[in-house]
Image (cartoon, rainbow, N blue to C red; front, top):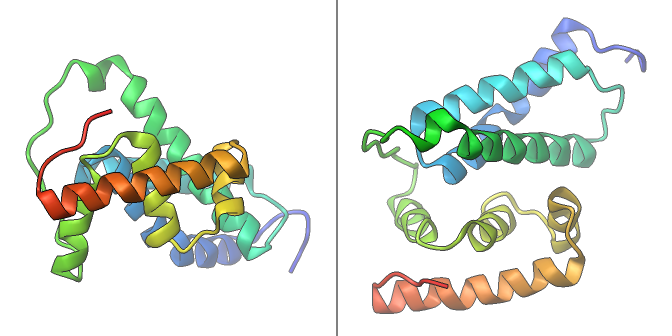
Length: 163
């Protein structure tokens, strides 16, 4: 593989490998199917435009997650997003139990939802999450612990948990 620039086939192969993960991360953040699709497309375009010369899977996965989370933050900050009301749209996940947990996960604040999602659904370690979020390992560990407790309360008591 050429270290300077990826060929179109190589880039397409990488995008195909990560596109589902990008969509899941975007969807769990923006809670809207169409916005998640748009973000997924923007991340793929950013990848092709940047054309990174590193192919290490962990770095690439972290890069995709970081860019996806940044695009989600950009959407949340946009005036258009703040001034519109989204349509109710739910996406069916392969496992109904997973959808129920994701629904409950959305009741948590962003920081807890993000670290729990990345840890349990994308199988990232605390160190990887800390690197992606630019937080210390201890901060991410604390958020995981607190998030688990809050999610447990939500799942057991069936209520929402507010900070």
